[in-house]
Image 1 (tube, helix red, strand yellow):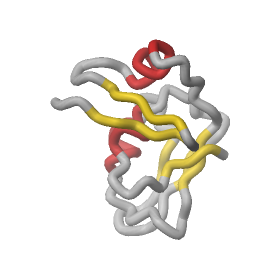
Image 2 (cartoon, one colour):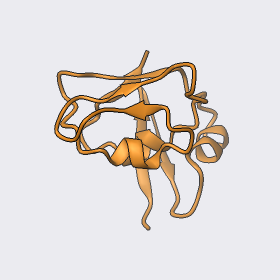
Image 3 (cartoon, helix red, strand yellow):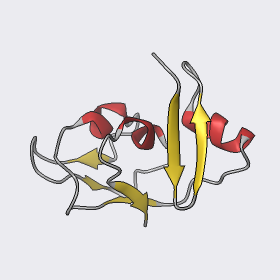
Length: 90
């Protein structure tokens, strides 16, 4: 694992390797909002879905994924995995 920079809106913060995104966000004074996946940029790589501990992200491989707002707890782990910047504030 390595450090990852996460951007939410106009705020960015570093998530040190081995640290939960929500903990790094809190340390940086950033509140993780409700999130959605932009279908125009999502490549369906499944990295976000694999990172989601609550199973809130679904979709077929190579097709845009979606976040189930009822299951999402705004932990932000998906943000650290998305390589296309497709996970944005809802």
